[in-house]
Length: 131
Image (tube, rainbow, N blue to C red; front, side, top):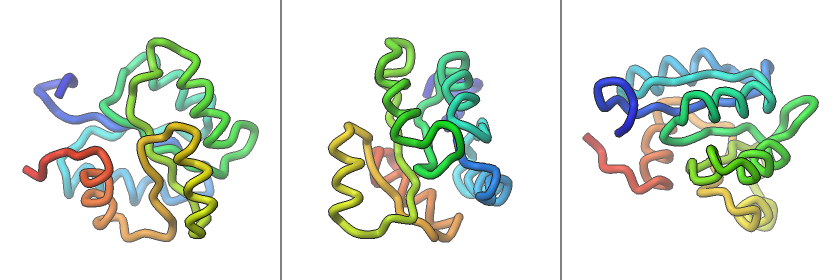
């Protein structure tokens, strides 16, 4: 992909109440991806624009600017509008997930999830080949 030494890069934007470190370590170890972390929607927007990750994992529930609002800002910016974005949510009902998909996100992953299973879910949603 386009990052250092063809290493896939993801921007992980989660509220401070999630276990971002565990998810980051799991994704780096299991998939070899470079993970950029952000603790807020605002920080995620800045990282996405500056670093141009291959994909964004975005928590729905965050203080100040929630995931759907952050996604809207990503879509408004030509520099970030085409970055595939997956929402992470505790809302498990299909109707709730469909509302998120209707926003134009690439996919939705429900919490709780096992960090190691997350790699397979991301690869499936983004149609990335398993290496």
